[in-house]
Image 1 (spheres, rainbow, N blue to C red):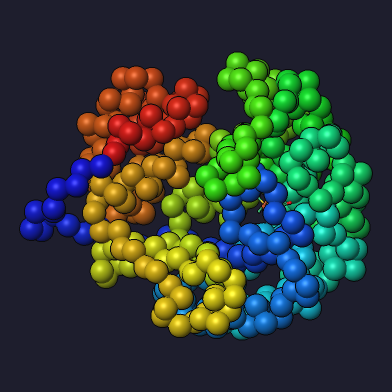
Image 2: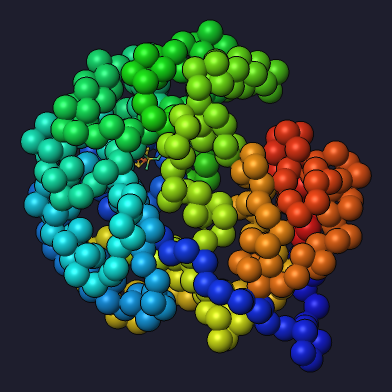
Length: 395
Ligand SMILES: C[S@@+](CC[C@H](N)C(=O)[O-])C[C@H]1O[C@@H](n2cnc3c(N)ncnc32)[C@H](O)[C@@H]1O
Ligand code: SF4
Protein backbone atom coordinates (compact mmCIF):
# COMPACT_ATOMS: atom_id res chain seq x y z
CA UNK A 1 0.00 0.00 0.00
CA UNK A 2 1.09 3.57 -0.68
CA UNK A 3 2.47 4.77 2.68
CA UNK A 4 3.36 8.39 1.83
CA UNK A 5 1.82 11.12 3.99
CA UNK A 6 -1.20 12.87 2.45
CA UNK A 7 -0.61 16.29 0.91
CA UNK A 8 -2.59 19.24 2.35
CA UNK A 9 -6.22 19.10 1.24
CA UNK A 10 -5.81 15.56 -0.04
CA UNK A 11 -6.66 13.61 3.12
CA UNK A 12 -10.11 12.60 4.21
CA UNK A 13 -13.10 10.89 2.73
CA UNK A 14 -16.29 12.54 1.50
CA UNK A 15 -19.58 10.84 2.20
CA UNK A 16 -22.79 12.16 0.66
CA UNK A 17 -24.91 9.76 2.74
CA UNK A 18 -24.57 7.02 5.33
CA UNK A 19 -24.72 3.34 4.29
CA UNK A 20 -27.23 0.83 5.73
CA UNK A 21 -26.56 -0.36 9.28
CA UNK A 22 -26.33 -3.96 10.57
CA UNK A 23 -25.59 -5.39 14.00
CA UNK A 24 -23.27 -8.32 14.80
CA UNK A 25 -23.46 -9.91 18.26
CA UNK A 26 -20.76 -12.40 19.29
CA UNK A 27 -21.59 -15.24 21.70
CA UNK A 28 -18.22 -16.91 22.31
CA UNK A 29 -18.83 -20.36 23.84
CA UNK A 30 -18.88 -23.81 22.22
CA UNK A 31 -19.31 -27.37 23.52
CA UNK A 32 -15.75 -28.07 22.38
CA UNK A 33 -13.16 -26.20 20.34
CA UNK A 34 -12.86 -27.62 16.79
CA UNK A 35 -9.23 -28.14 15.68
CA UNK A 36 -9.59 -26.07 12.47
CA UNK A 37 -11.38 -23.08 14.00
CA UNK A 38 -9.79 -19.69 14.67
CA UNK A 39 -12.97 -17.88 15.66
CA UNK A 40 -12.92 -16.21 19.06
CA UNK A 41 -14.58 -19.21 20.71
CA UNK A 42 -13.99 -21.07 23.98
CA UNK A 43 -15.00 -24.40 25.38
CA UNK A 44 -17.86 -23.89 27.83
CA UNK A 45 -16.97 -25.23 31.28
CA UNK A 46 -19.69 -25.46 33.91
CA UNK A 47 -22.80 -23.31 33.72
CA UNK A 48 -22.86 -20.80 30.89
CA UNK A 49 -23.17 -17.23 32.25
CA UNK A 50 -25.61 -16.45 29.45
CA UNK A 51 -27.88 -13.97 31.26
CA UNK A 52 -24.92 -12.06 32.74
CA UNK A 53 -23.26 -11.97 29.34
CA UNK A 54 -26.45 -10.57 27.79
CA UNK A 55 -26.43 -7.73 30.34
CA UNK A 56 -22.81 -7.00 29.34
CA UNK A 57 -23.89 -6.95 25.66
CA UNK A 58 -26.57 -4.41 26.49
CA UNK A 59 -24.05 -2.20 28.34
CA UNK A 60 -21.81 -2.52 25.29
CA UNK A 61 -24.72 -1.46 23.07
CA UNK A 62 -25.25 1.76 25.00
CA UNK A 63 -21.65 2.74 24.20
CA UNK A 64 -22.32 2.14 20.50
CA UNK A 65 -25.50 4.23 20.25
CA UNK A 66 -23.71 7.42 19.07
CA UNK A 67 -22.66 5.48 15.95
CA UNK A 68 -26.23 4.65 14.94
CA UNK A 69 -26.65 8.23 13.67
CA UNK A 70 -30.41 8.04 13.20
CA UNK A 71 -30.48 4.82 11.17
CA UNK A 72 -32.66 1.77 11.64
CA UNK A 73 -30.98 -1.63 11.90
CA UNK A 74 -31.54 -3.73 8.77
CA UNK A 75 -30.07 -7.06 9.94
CA UNK A 76 -28.89 -8.70 13.17
CA UNK A 77 -26.53 -11.69 13.27
CA UNK A 78 -26.04 -13.66 16.50
CA UNK A 79 -22.79 -15.47 15.72
CA UNK A 80 -20.18 -17.40 17.55
CA UNK A 81 -19.05 -19.56 19.02
CA UNK A 82 -22.29 -21.45 19.33
CA UNK A 83 -25.21 -19.11 20.08
CA UNK A 84 -27.59 -22.10 20.22
CA UNK A 85 -25.99 -22.92 23.60
CA UNK A 86 -27.72 -19.85 25.05
CA UNK A 87 -31.10 -20.37 26.70
CA UNK A 88 -34.32 -19.15 25.09
CA UNK A 89 -34.69 -16.71 28.00
CA UNK A 90 -31.23 -15.21 27.38
CA UNK A 91 -31.87 -14.71 23.64
CA UNK A 92 -35.32 -13.24 24.38
CA UNK A 93 -33.78 -10.80 26.91
CA UNK A 94 -31.08 -9.86 24.40
CA UNK A 95 -33.52 -9.15 21.56
CA UNK A 96 -35.89 -7.26 23.85
CA UNK A 97 -32.94 -5.15 25.08
CA UNK A 98 -31.82 -4.44 21.51
CA UNK A 99 -35.36 -3.46 20.48
CA UNK A 100 -35.62 -1.09 23.43
CA UNK A 101 -32.57 0.89 22.26
CA UNK A 102 -32.62 0.52 18.46
CA UNK A 103 -35.16 1.06 15.68
CA UNK A 104 -35.31 -2.21 13.75
CA UNK A 105 -36.30 -2.15 10.07
CA UNK A 106 -39.80 -3.62 9.49
CA UNK A 107 -38.42 -6.68 7.63
CA UNK A 108 -35.32 -7.05 9.83
CA UNK A 109 -33.41 -10.30 9.23
CA UNK A 110 -32.35 -11.87 12.55
CA UNK A 111 -30.00 -14.86 12.15
CA UNK A 112 -28.73 -17.17 14.90
CA UNK A 113 -25.93 -19.71 14.46
CA UNK A 114 -26.60 -23.21 15.70
CA UNK A 115 -24.48 -26.33 16.12
CA UNK A 116 -26.27 -29.70 15.62
CA UNK A 117 -24.67 -30.82 18.88
CA UNK A 118 -26.44 -28.01 20.75
CA UNK A 119 -30.05 -28.33 19.59
CA UNK A 120 -33.18 -28.53 21.66
CA UNK A 121 -36.76 -28.29 20.32
CA UNK A 122 -38.08 -26.11 23.14
CA UNK A 123 -35.10 -23.78 22.86
CA UNK A 124 -35.47 -23.44 19.07
CA UNK A 125 -39.17 -22.61 19.67
CA UNK A 126 -38.14 -19.93 22.17
CA UNK A 127 -35.59 -18.44 19.71
CA UNK A 128 -38.32 -18.20 17.04
CA UNK A 129 -40.74 -16.69 19.56
CA UNK A 130 -38.10 -14.12 20.58
CA UNK A 131 -37.88 -12.89 16.97
CA UNK A 132 -35.06 -14.91 15.40
CA UNK A 133 -36.22 -15.54 11.81
CA UNK A 134 -33.19 -17.23 10.21
CA UNK A 135 -31.05 -20.11 11.48
CA UNK A 136 -27.57 -20.95 10.25
CA UNK A 137 -26.65 -24.54 11.12
CA UNK A 138 -23.01 -25.68 11.12
CA UNK A 139 -23.17 -29.12 9.48
CA UNK A 140 -19.73 -29.28 7.78
CA UNK A 141 -20.16 -32.84 6.42
CA UNK A 142 -22.61 -35.73 6.38
CA UNK A 143 -19.82 -38.31 6.71
CA UNK A 144 -19.31 -39.48 10.26
CA UNK A 145 -15.63 -40.26 9.79
CA UNK A 146 -15.09 -36.71 8.50
CA UNK A 147 -17.07 -35.23 11.38
CA UNK A 148 -14.79 -37.12 13.76
CA UNK A 149 -11.66 -35.91 11.94
CA UNK A 150 -13.00 -32.35 12.26
CA UNK A 151 -13.52 -32.82 16.00
CA UNK A 152 -17.25 -32.13 15.68
CA UNK A 153 -19.51 -32.93 18.62
CA UNK A 154 -22.33 -34.33 16.43
CA UNK A 155 -22.89 -37.01 13.78
CA UNK A 156 -24.76 -36.87 10.47
CA UNK A 157 -28.04 -38.07 12.00
CA UNK A 158 -27.95 -35.25 14.54
CA UNK A 159 -27.29 -32.81 11.69
CA UNK A 160 -30.45 -33.97 9.88
CA UNK A 161 -32.42 -33.90 13.14
CA UNK A 162 -31.28 -30.29 13.74
CA UNK A 163 -32.79 -29.25 10.40
CA UNK A 164 -36.09 -31.04 11.17
CA UNK A 165 -36.18 -29.49 14.64
CA UNK A 166 -35.60 -26.03 13.21
CA UNK A 167 -38.43 -26.47 10.70
CA UNK A 168 -40.79 -27.83 13.37
CA UNK A 169 -40.03 -24.70 15.43
CA UNK A 170 -41.19 -22.54 12.50
CA UNK A 171 -37.89 -21.65 10.78
CA UNK A 172 -38.18 -21.72 6.99
CA UNK A 173 -35.16 -19.51 6.30
CA UNK A 174 -32.31 -21.94 6.93
CA UNK A 175 -28.64 -21.82 6.00
CA UNK A 176 -26.46 -24.91 6.18
CA UNK A 177 -22.66 -24.47 6.53
CA UNK A 178 -20.60 -27.16 4.79
CA UNK A 179 -16.86 -27.43 4.27
CA UNK A 180 -14.95 -29.20 1.47
CA UNK A 181 -11.34 -30.19 0.82
CA UNK A 182 -11.38 -31.97 4.18
CA UNK A 183 -8.60 -34.24 5.47
CA UNK A 184 -8.05 -37.09 2.95
CA UNK A 185 -11.11 -35.88 1.03
CA UNK A 186 -12.02 -36.86 -2.54
CA UNK A 187 -14.35 -35.43 -5.19
CA UNK A 188 -17.06 -38.05 -4.67
CA UNK A 189 -17.09 -37.40 -0.92
CA UNK A 190 -17.34 -33.63 -1.27
CA UNK A 191 -20.13 -33.92 -3.86
CA UNK A 192 -21.90 -36.48 -1.63
CA UNK A 193 -21.91 -33.95 1.23
CA UNK A 194 -23.56 -31.37 -1.02
CA UNK A 195 -26.15 -33.95 -2.10
CA UNK A 196 -26.86 -34.57 1.56
CA UNK A 197 -27.51 -30.85 2.04
CA UNK A 198 -29.65 -30.59 -1.11
CA UNK A 199 -31.91 -33.40 0.13
CA UNK A 200 -32.79 -31.12 3.04
CA UNK A 201 -33.69 -28.26 0.63
CA UNK A 202 -32.43 -25.32 2.73
CA UNK A 203 -32.92 -21.72 1.55
CA UNK A 204 -29.15 -21.11 1.55
CA UNK A 205 -25.91 -23.09 1.55
CA UNK A 206 -22.49 -21.75 2.58
CA UNK A 207 -19.85 -24.03 1.07
CA UNK A 208 -16.39 -23.20 2.45
CA UNK A 209 -13.03 -24.62 1.49
CA UNK A 210 -11.34 -25.80 4.70
CA UNK A 211 -8.35 -23.55 5.40
CA UNK A 212 -5.54 -24.13 7.87
CA UNK A 213 -5.71 -21.08 10.11
CA UNK A 214 -2.92 -19.71 12.32
CA UNK A 215 -2.99 -20.75 15.99
CA UNK A 216 -5.24 -23.77 15.49
CA UNK A 217 -4.59 -27.44 16.26
CA UNK A 218 -4.71 -28.17 12.50
CA UNK A 219 -1.95 -25.63 11.88
CA UNK A 220 0.24 -27.23 14.53
CA UNK A 221 -0.41 -30.75 13.19
CA UNK A 222 -1.66 -30.35 9.63
CA UNK A 223 -3.87 -33.15 8.26
CA UNK A 224 -3.36 -34.43 4.70
CA UNK A 225 -5.44 -32.17 2.47
CA UNK A 226 -6.37 -32.83 -1.18
CA UNK A 227 -4.17 -31.22 -3.85
CA UNK A 228 -5.17 -28.23 -5.98
CA UNK A 229 -6.39 -30.27 -8.95
CA UNK A 230 -8.71 -32.35 -6.75
CA UNK A 231 -10.00 -29.15 -5.13
CA UNK A 232 -10.62 -27.64 -8.58
CA UNK A 233 -12.67 -30.68 -9.58
CA UNK A 234 -14.67 -30.53 -6.34
CA UNK A 235 -15.50 -26.88 -7.07
CA UNK A 236 -16.45 -27.53 -10.68
CA UNK A 237 -18.73 -30.45 -9.85
CA UNK A 238 -20.08 -28.88 -6.66
CA UNK A 239 -20.96 -25.54 -8.24
CA UNK A 240 -22.68 -27.24 -11.17
CA UNK A 241 -24.72 -29.39 -8.78
CA UNK A 242 -25.78 -26.39 -6.71
CA UNK A 243 -26.74 -24.42 -9.82
CA UNK A 244 -28.77 -27.36 -11.17
CA UNK A 245 -30.76 -27.34 -7.93
CA UNK A 246 -31.51 -23.62 -8.12
CA UNK A 247 -28.81 -22.32 -5.75
CA UNK A 248 -27.18 -19.30 -7.36
CA UNK A 249 -23.62 -18.53 -6.32
CA UNK A 250 -23.54 -14.85 -5.32
CA UNK A 251 -20.28 -14.73 -3.33
CA UNK A 252 -17.14 -16.88 -3.18
CA UNK A 253 -18.74 -19.38 -0.76
CA UNK A 254 -22.44 -18.38 -0.67
CA UNK A 255 -25.27 -20.00 -2.65
CA UNK A 256 -28.94 -19.05 -2.35
CA UNK A 257 -32.34 -19.88 -3.72
CA UNK A 258 -34.11 -16.86 -5.27
CA UNK A 259 -34.81 -14.17 -2.68
CA UNK A 260 -32.84 -15.99 0.02
CA UNK A 261 -29.43 -14.31 0.03
CA UNK A 262 -28.06 -13.53 3.46
CA UNK A 263 -28.84 -9.83 3.83
CA UNK A 264 -26.46 -9.47 6.77
CA UNK A 265 -23.42 -10.78 4.91
CA UNK A 266 -24.46 -8.83 1.80
CA UNK A 267 -24.25 -5.65 3.86
CA UNK A 268 -20.63 -6.53 4.81
CA UNK A 269 -19.73 -7.30 1.22
CA UNK A 270 -21.34 -4.08 -0.02
CA UNK A 271 -19.27 -2.17 2.55
CA UNK A 272 -22.25 -1.20 4.66
CA UNK A 273 -21.86 -0.19 8.31
CA UNK A 274 -22.18 -2.53 11.28
CA UNK A 275 -21.97 -2.34 15.03
CA UNK A 276 -20.18 -5.21 16.77
CA UNK A 277 -21.21 -6.26 20.27
CA UNK A 278 -19.54 -9.00 22.32
CA UNK A 279 -16.11 -10.42 23.09
CA UNK A 280 -13.78 -9.78 20.16
CA UNK A 281 -16.57 -8.33 17.98
CA UNK A 282 -15.64 -5.87 15.24
CA UNK A 283 -17.65 -2.91 13.99
CA UNK A 284 -17.27 -0.51 11.07
CA UNK A 285 -18.99 2.87 11.05
CA UNK A 286 -18.91 5.81 8.68
CA UNK A 287 -18.31 9.19 10.32
CA UNK A 288 -19.58 11.72 7.81
CA UNK A 289 -18.51 14.98 9.38
CA UNK A 290 -15.02 13.68 10.25
CA UNK A 291 -14.59 12.21 6.74
CA UNK A 292 -13.48 8.91 8.28
CA UNK A 293 -14.44 5.31 8.78
CA UNK A 294 -14.07 4.05 12.37
CA UNK A 295 -13.18 0.40 12.97
CA UNK A 296 -13.98 -0.68 16.51
CA UNK A 297 -12.90 -3.96 18.15
CA UNK A 298 -13.97 -5.23 21.57
CA UNK A 299 -11.66 -6.98 24.00
CA UNK A 300 -11.47 -10.70 23.15
CA UNK A 301 -11.48 -12.53 26.46
CA UNK A 302 -15.10 -13.22 27.52
CA UNK A 303 -14.44 -12.71 31.24
CA UNK A 304 -12.56 -9.43 30.72
CA UNK A 305 -15.26 -8.38 28.29
CA UNK A 306 -17.99 -9.03 30.83
CA UNK A 307 -16.16 -6.87 33.38
CA UNK A 308 -15.43 -4.00 31.01
CA UNK A 309 -18.31 -3.94 28.51
CA UNK A 310 -19.55 -0.41 27.97
CA UNK A 311 -16.33 1.17 29.32
CA UNK A 312 -13.81 2.88 27.06
CA UNK A 313 -11.06 0.35 27.89
CA UNK A 314 -13.04 -2.49 26.27
CA UNK A 315 -12.72 -0.93 22.79
CA UNK A 316 -9.79 -0.44 20.43
CA UNK A 317 -10.58 2.03 17.68
CA UNK A 318 -8.78 2.59 14.41
CA UNK A 319 -9.63 5.36 11.98
CA UNK A 320 -9.51 4.96 8.22
CA UNK A 321 -9.09 8.34 6.51
CA UNK A 322 -6.69 7.62 3.64
CA UNK A 323 -8.53 7.19 0.33
CA UNK A 324 -6.22 4.34 -0.78
CA UNK A 325 -6.98 2.36 2.35
CA UNK A 326 -10.74 2.95 2.13
CA UNK A 327 -10.75 1.98 -1.56
CA UNK A 328 -8.84 -1.25 -0.89
CA UNK A 329 -11.08 -2.20 2.03
CA UNK A 330 -14.15 -1.57 -0.12
CA UNK A 331 -12.82 -3.74 -2.96
CA UNK A 332 -11.72 -6.55 -0.60
CA UNK A 333 -15.39 -6.95 0.19
CA UNK A 334 -17.26 -5.97 -2.97
CA UNK A 335 -15.14 -7.98 -5.41
CA UNK A 336 -16.10 -11.17 -3.55
CA UNK A 337 -19.60 -10.69 -4.97
CA UNK A 338 -20.33 -12.43 -8.26
CA UNK A 339 -22.35 -9.38 -9.37
CA UNK A 340 -19.73 -6.96 -8.08
CA UNK A 341 -20.99 -3.50 -7.22
CA UNK A 342 -21.85 -0.19 -8.84
CA UNK A 343 -19.54 2.78 -9.21
CA UNK A 344 -22.09 4.85 -7.26
CA UNK A 345 -21.85 2.47 -4.32
CA UNK A 346 -18.06 2.77 -4.43
CA UNK A 347 -18.20 6.57 -4.41
CA UNK A 348 -20.80 6.69 -1.62
CA UNK A 349 -19.17 4.12 0.68
CA UNK A 350 -15.45 4.48 -0.01
CA UNK A 351 -15.91 8.27 0.16
CA UNK A 352 -14.09 9.19 -3.08
CA UNK A 353 -14.70 9.40 -6.83
CA UNK A 354 -14.25 6.20 -8.82
CA UNK A 355 -11.56 8.01 -10.85
CA UNK A 356 -9.11 7.19 -8.02
CA UNK A 357 -9.17 3.60 -9.32
CA UNK A 358 -8.59 4.30 -13.01
CA UNK A 359 -4.99 3.08 -13.41
CA UNK A 360 -5.36 -0.08 -11.30
CA UNK A 361 -8.68 -0.85 -12.93
CA UNK A 362 -7.14 -0.71 -16.40
CA UNK A 363 -4.37 -3.09 -15.29
CA UNK A 364 -6.94 -5.53 -13.86
CA UNK A 365 -9.07 -5.44 -17.03
CA UNK A 366 -5.92 -5.99 -19.10
CA UNK A 367 -5.19 -9.19 -17.14
CA UNK A 368 -8.77 -10.42 -17.58
CA UNK A 369 -9.52 -10.20 -13.84
CA UNK A 370 -12.05 -7.35 -13.94
CA UNK A 371 -14.86 -6.82 -16.44
CA UNK A 372 -14.92 -3.64 -18.52
CA UNK A 373 -18.67 -3.02 -18.14
CA UNK A 374 -19.49 0.67 -17.71
CA UNK A 375 -20.67 1.75 -14.26
CA UNK A 376 -19.82 -1.58 -12.62
CA UNK A 377 -16.89 -2.94 -10.60
CA UNK A 378 -16.99 -6.68 -11.06
CA UNK A 379 -14.37 -9.42 -10.95
CA UNK A 380 -14.41 -11.98 -13.78
CA UNK A 381 -14.62 -15.65 -12.72
CA UNK A 382 -10.84 -15.84 -13.06
CA UNK A 383 -10.50 -12.64 -10.97
CA UNK A 384 -12.64 -14.15 -8.19
CA UNK A 385 -10.46 -17.28 -8.25
CA UNK A 386 -7.32 -15.16 -7.63
CA UNK A 387 -8.82 -12.37 -5.60
CA UNK A 388 -5.66 -11.64 -3.60
CA UNK A 389 -3.62 -11.04 -6.74
CA UNK A 390 -6.40 -8.88 -8.16
CA UNK A 391 -6.49 -6.79 -4.95
CA UNK A 392 -2.71 -6.34 -5.03
CA UNK A 393 -3.21 -4.21 -8.14
CA UNK A 394 -5.21 -1.76 -6.02
CA UNK A 395 -2.85 -1.78 -3.03
C1 LIG B 1 -19.10 -19.86 13.92
S1 LIG B 1 -19.12 -21.29 12.92
C2 LIG B 1 -20.87 -21.81 12.79
C3 LIG B 1 -21.70 -22.21 14.01
C4 LIG B 1 -21.18 -23.24 14.96
N1 LIG B 1 -20.10 -22.68 15.72
C5 LIG B 1 -20.73 -24.51 14.31
O1 LIG B 1 -19.57 -24.63 14.00
O2 LIG B 1 -21.59 -25.37 14.12
C6 LIG B 1 -18.94 -20.61 11.31
C7 LIG B 1 -18.60 -21.51 10.14
O3 LIG B 1 -17.33 -21.19 9.63
C8 LIG B 1 -16.81 -22.29 8.92
N2 LIG B 1 -15.38 -22.42 9.28
C9 LIG B 1 -14.83 -22.30 10.51
N3 LIG B 1 -13.48 -22.49 10.44
C10 LIG B 1 -13.19 -22.73 9.14
C11 LIG B 1 -11.97 -23.01 8.43
N4 LIG B 1 -10.80 -23.10 9.05
N5 LIG B 1 -12.05 -23.20 7.08
C12 LIG B 1 -13.24 -23.10 6.45
N6 LIG B 1 -14.40 -22.85 7.06
C13 LIG B 1 -14.39 -22.66 8.40
C14 LIG B 1 -17.61 -23.51 9.33
O4 LIG B 1 -18.36 -23.98 8.22
C15 LIG B 1 -18.52 -22.98 10.42
O5 LIG B 1 -19.80 -23.57 10.38
S1 SF4 C 1 -18.39 -25.14 17.03
FE1 SF4 C 1 -18.13 -23.55 15.42
S2 SF4 C 1 -17.28 -21.72 16.45
FE2 SF4 C 1 -17.14 -23.47 17.89
S3 SF4 C 1 -15.06 -24.17 17.62
FE3 SF4 C 1 -16.35 -25.38 16.22
S4 SF4 C 1 -16.39 -24.24 14.22
FE4 SF4 C 1 -15.54 -22.88 15.82
